[in-house]
View (spheres, rainbow, N blue to C red):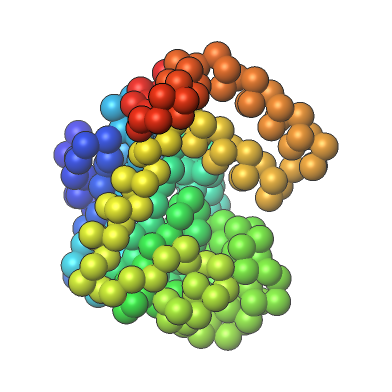
Length: 260
């Protein structure tokens, strides 16, 4: 289906999603989230794609936040539906058993920041900035940020970001644990593709299991997590990739994984 708010590009085993509203610094509105939901569902079902990268169109912003004009026109009943929609979509991102990588090329504020932290990994340009300024608009975030951000950076730092609205640069975000890798702006896509290539050297089913297990560790009981870890370890032995991986190691060659 044609999209208006996002651009979809396809490379070998990778879907690249670009938020395509550069005239408003890639601000996120309901239509953007609905299009993102559709492509996420397609991605989840497509065996030929092993990873997704999300970025912003243009050179200034990943996303500067929610669309303020749209928020201004909402009443409380509209807000109920919008919050439900955004939570559903960002939860979907976490539950797809494939890596989703935020490639942050500029501003990632408010909803844009929340979108990055719902991704599995974040690679950022040295020009990137992260912040949570929604209290300056008289609102809290409806994008799951209050639940995810403290688990990543700790409650004190999360409160600082929410209370002050101060934007932090890429290096500070790296120290906070909000970002995995910071690179020179001109090398952002080169390094993002290198990161994906390193992931693709490993069995995609095992990567999906790791995503599920690490996410569970943030929310679930450790005893239940141990049980799940054991269950997924056993399931690996039912895959073709396990046989290929162990045989390749013994034969001193690079494995060729097929996701089966």
